[in-house]
Image (tube, rainbow, N blue to C red; front, top):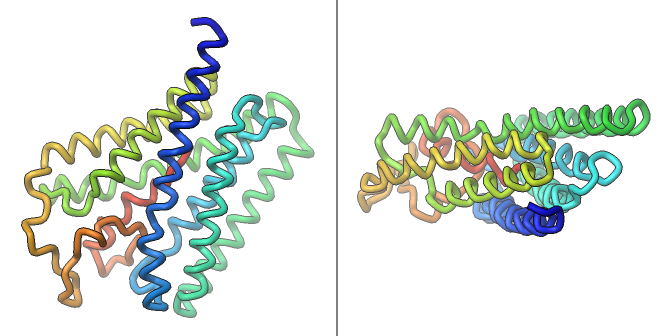
Length: 263
């Protein structure tokens, strides 16, 4: 394949990756509309949003031209994702109970400190290949961690033999996002993009496989009871926060959403 064709294909898959990742980044708006409406974070956890913000910051930094040439599409979507996640974190902090607010503020501060350390070390202590290697490893480690989050919901699906809490479109877009960036990384000969997204693509494929195996067991019409006796509706199955341990159904819903478009 000639270089021009490879470049066109790389840009094409990068644009597709940007679109699918943006969908995943915006999916939690359902949760945050609820938080704002009720002026309470209820049983949701803010940890996934803080950690996803860190992943986005590291990946956006890695994609910058002075770190990793020809990866500007990685920076654009992850920069956008970092801004979106920051909004989620700030909303969560505003409406969280005092103890939860202190915990998330502490984690938020630690995440900013870690990112600042990576950025400063890469700017002033490293150059060229060593800079790319350092930043690429940091971004890859956190991308793999973020992509691993669906293991919880996948185990729930196998245990319950039901996909009620694994929304099809989230699984589909996670697969498309991971696959697009995997191909983007292969075409650009960039293992720091290809490896974590190849892992994510594989997990997305497994989620889709589980969905088709157990799709006939999805919600038998009346919804699932929450601890307070309310019914989990179809709309709520798209919510993306992670619940605390005493609300297992909600936790199953939202661990799928911790993927949030990593690239």
